[in-house]
Image (cartoon, rainbow over all chains, first blue to last red; front, top):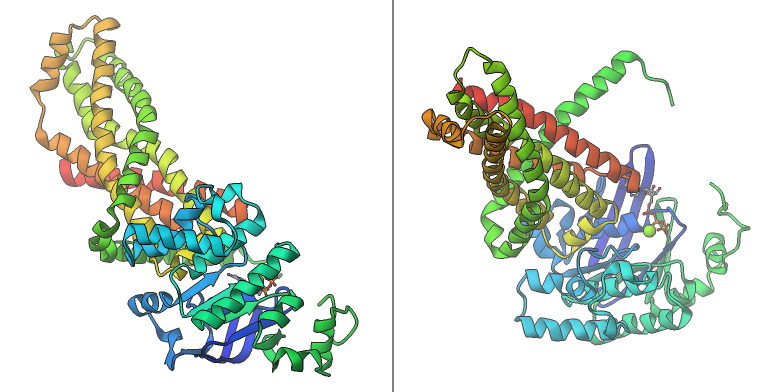
Amino acid sequence: MIEIVDLYKSFGENQVLRGVNLKINKGETVVVLGRSGCGKSVLLKHIIGLLKPDKGKIFVDGEDITTFKNKKLYKLRQRFGMLFQGSALFDSMTVEENVALGLREHRLLPENKIKEKVKKKLKLVGLSELEDLKPAELSGGMKKRVGLARAIAMEPEFVLYDEPTTGLDPIMADAINQLLIELRNKLSITSIAVTHDITSAYKIADRIALLYQGKIVFEGTPEITKSSEDPVVMQFVTGSAEGPIQAKE
Amino acid sequence: MKKKNFFEIIGEKTLRFFEGIGEVAILLKDIFITLPKVFRNFHLTTQQMLFMGVSSLPLVLITSIFTGGVSAVQAAYQFSDYVPMRYLGTAVGKAVVIELGPVLTALVVAGRVGAGIAAELGTMKVTEQIDALETLALNPIRFLVVPRFLSGIFMLPVLTIFSDFVAILGGLGVSVFLLGISSYTFLNGLKLFFHTRDLIGGLVKAVVFGGIIATMGCYHGFKTQGGAEGVGKSTTRAVVFSSVLILISDYVIASIFFG
Ligand SMILES: Nc1ncnc2c1ncn2[C@@H]1O[C@H](COP(=O)(O)OP(=O)(O)OP(=O)(O)O)[C@@H](O)[C@H]1O
Ligand SMILES: [Mg+2]
């Protein structure tokens, strides 16, 4: 279980998070919606300890990880996987090496088992044939899927997805949605996904949370979200330029 | 934004400077703490060593042969009629082994490898690859910095030995073919006042220079912000700072060893 309590983060004058509260239960998928630049990626980076908050706590299974240092932090991260918005593949390595890196360097398995596992993960994301290519030779959507394979390669308990379906064609996007649902159902992975893709959000989410002006202003199941009468939520879900949220701020 | 006055700018720059020193000190501390774990992933270090050696060797050899040549010409000119030419080998040898070999090799490697390290790590920083390493629970110091640091302090002395050798050959060639001094005379002069201390002093310098190049490359790479432009800036900074530090530490080590 992950519990975010009253999280604040500013970059200089720019107050990005202003008291975020959010709870993610074990085995649950929570989708965080929000406008571009509202701090979704920043929020995810706090959960895995890449950024330190100015104020507030993040509990993972009851332990406040914002106080974790070095050894403890690395130990914790072994239980996490993260898909970056820009994929963040290691461009000096092949696709196969990217996906295998965590397993290899932590010596989690013998080499032949690692090879097998990497093959399986790449197959899951529909990229079986591309093992020996370098990231520079892949399309944006392919990179995203390699990033996804890398995030789940070590079979983490928690996965953070930063826009898992952005840049994918609708068919592949749906396949990835299916994969995320499968991961949750079969392996009971706890996950937080950030997305702009409302269709995908409805599909994969157990709960949807809306980040607006540095706070979570709404939380609810997809059904509740759909029928919500909150003007901010309605505007976001219907994707309208008219309403309480101004297109330009 | 408010325009800053002169004193504010000076104050800010001074603060930045000391902050930088502190950060480099912390980086060095982290490197030394992580050093013992290097053997768990030693292939990363050997990769760096190969890359560093292979990529800089041609350049080092070319600069060295001409440096040796010019130091022979220069020494002969300075000797003119006052110092016998049998000391030419001595002068060239000492200059190369103590000073020119280590310093010029270091400057060439700073431009080649130091810049490369800063550009590579800088790109990794701005494309979030360093963050990605962290999320895989892999410590970037252990995976990126320590291999480069070790390869720096090991490969620079190796390259310096090559450089010394080739530079002396260059000096010898110039003496024999242009200055009309026999190779026997030159080599005798070389041996005459040769001290092991000279060689060791030169190699100690090389170790320190290698450490400087790798540390500056990594530090400025990690500090990179803001896309391709930022990467360009860090690369320049890495080269400038390593070059200046190389020359300063050269003076310091020389005064300790030979002062
Ligand atoms: N390392 C950083 N340094 C300074 N400012 C930052 C940093 N990272 C993010 N920000 C700022 O924080 C704000 C939120 O950024 P973030 O990347 O979290 O947005 P986002 O919600 O993920 O947007 P998008 O949907 O476009 O990805 C932005 O205003 C951004 O400028
Ligand atoms: Mg984002």
